[in-house]
Length: 332
Image 1 (cartoon, rainbow, N blue to C red):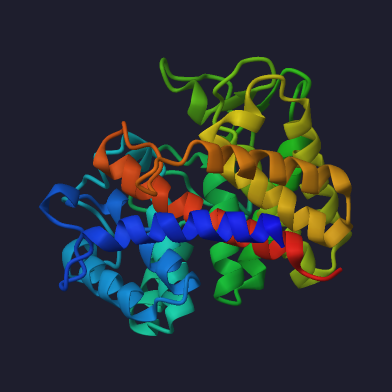
Image 2 (image 1 turned 45 degrees about the vertical axis):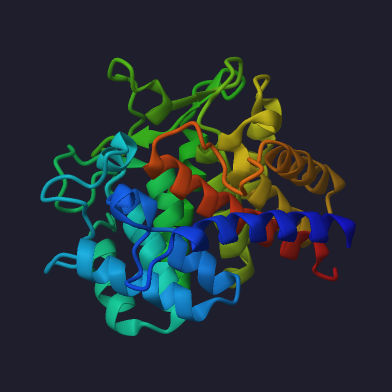
């Protein structure tokens, strides 16, 4: 109960920080005029039992960022000032679809999901990194596929969810040496992408030896595959979740003390509940405790970063602390 209290109190401080910025029109104000400031907030406020504020935020997002084709963008051909979302085009959309679904706003949820599922590659099972209308060259990746696979579970699309699960399991079998790193993308022919653009290594590989890796690329598959196992009882997905976790354990960098590890903590907590493996619970608690340690006294996280990062990460870490608390304290 002590762990739950600490995590939920920290999450509540994060939500209160966001609430202090929230106007009656559902906006965080003129300094937060970017999709990245908002896309996780409806999910957080609904999870926190604040349905009215969640609806305010979702209505503002619909008015300000939703387009006639049901995409969400800050400006035409520009997802966000966070360059990562111009790369992972569909990622913010997935959060908004899940948030709207949880709120029962099906007028937003289903059109948003219709846009997302059009980026699914049925032959390969993955989801296009750039989205179906993006400028990419047919690559699929681990983050988009795990994220939109979970969205499919929320919408009852088990066919696409299982396709995503098989894609993630197959990715592991293609790796040349998991002791060195995990390659994250497949090309349109279904083979690993080896040619990494300059200054974009974080989008293509997670090294086991270097610090400050994009550890969330490992965490999301763990959580999604474990949830998919619960939906299907197919041991293939549970094994793949464990294998991704084992890769995480092999990382020698700063995975346990990085703000980019929040999804690893979530995934480990889900596996801890399902498997009762104490290693999973220990990893989840270690990372979550670090997130508490780096929370600003104001309640926010990463306050030295641009607004689109501070709002984004304050919402996300607040979500995961609540989810971790629930996963770890659910009776076995």
